[in-house]
Each structure stands twice: as structure tokens, then as C-alpha cells.
Amino acid sequence: MKKLQPDWLTQGWIDAEYKKYVVMAYLQAVKQNFSDRKLCPDLPELRRHYEAGLHFRRCKGTLNASFPKQVDRIDVKSRTITYKTEVTDDAYLSEVDAIMDFALPRFHEALTEGQHLWRRIAASLTLEPIGLLPLRPDEGYLLIHRNTQSETLVYYFCLTLYDENEPGGRIVQFRFLEKTRKSLGHTFEHMKLDLVRRYRHLPNPATFMLEARRSYPVEETLLPIARQLIALRATG
Image 1 (cartoon, rainbow, N blue to C red):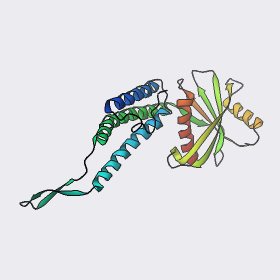
Image 2 (image 1 turned 90 degrees about the horizontal axis):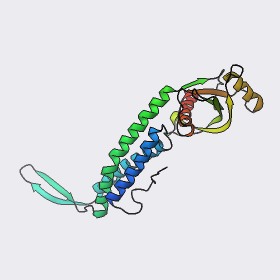
Image 3 (image 1 turned 90 degrees about the vertical axis):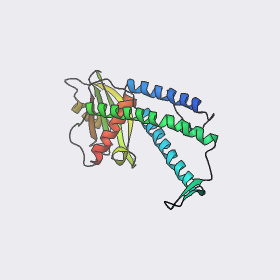
Image 4 (image 1 turned 180 degrees about the horizontal axis):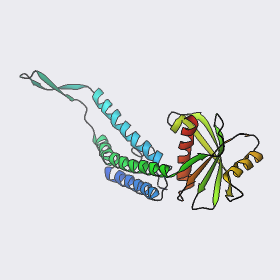
């Protein structure tokens, strides 16, 4: 996968044409993953790149505003004084500005595309509890059932630390347990009972079933969306 390093802007050769090529190669890989319905890790990384670019712009404006200024022109008639800064951008900063002028709108466009895709896929999924949920559904099991697949994926999950940047304010971690098959005699309820029997440290686990009508990538799409849905469900 084509990655863009956090310090891509100042890393290596600072040349606008070269950096434009780097950005376009990265975004081409991101958009190909979006076409394949793979959302992560591209979507959160793309958001970080876009926010870092905005932060750079804000900090640069603050820095320029703090430079000393001298009187440029006095208009006696309107009683106004125009100042100009004593510090001008050198070739390096001008090149960086050109790079950011190119990158930021393209980051925003790709980020918007990814967010729309996330919402569209999330709206097509169904997260339902299996049996009664405990009062504090902080850990349990997630069953991922894709209608196009015969196997159901079983994960253990737990909600850990609080994080204001995470959906619902909680971090959800997953651990893959097994694959199993749903049948008339082996329903989702039977799967839960079997998990309770084998993993006795969770006598009353929160158990959810995530149903996907299409075969979306599990690691890159279904688990990240399930992480958000479970966090919101557990804290709501």
C-alpha cells in the first residue's frame, strides 16, 4: 500500500513538482482502496494529513503576524497608516506554500469521498444484540455474518480507555477467535451459548451480530465500522 509519511511535506527534496507527484501517487492508491471498499487505515490517515495541513497554514499565519512591521504608507486624507512586514517568505517557504495549495483541496476531496463511503456502508449494516445485554456491555463477542459467505466470524471485544477522539469516547479492541457456520441447528443464539460454555470468565457477555449484505473487507472496513457502532451502543 502506498503510504504518505507524517513528515512528507518537509521530508527529502522540497520541490513543488516532485511533491505534487508524491501527493498524487498517494491519493491514487487511496482512491483505489476506496473503490475496493477498503476504508482503513487510509481514511483516518487521510484525515490526519488534512488536519496537519490546516494546522500548518494556521501556524504559518500566526508566525507571519508576529514578525515586526514598518510603516509602508501614510494616507493623510483618510488618516490611515499601512504597514508591511520586514520579513518576506524565502524560496523555501514559497515552495512549501505551493505544495500546500496543491495538496489541501485534494486531501479534502478524497477525505469527503471516504467519509461518504463510510456512512453509506455503515447504513447498510445491521448491528443487533444476541440475547439480553448486560448493564455494562464493556466486553463480549462480535459475530460477523456476511450474507454472501457461509462462515460467521467470531471476535472477542473489549472497551478499554477513554479517548475523546474515538466514537463514543471509548477504544474498542478486537481479537479473532474462530470461524463457524450458521445452520438451522446452530443459530446465533447457539453460538453465544457455546462461547459462554467454553469461555467461563464471561458468564454474561455482551454479544452482537453484525450483518453485512455484501462481502466488504473485514479488517479494513467491517471491523472499523463495528468498532464505532459498538462504542456508541455501549456508551449510549
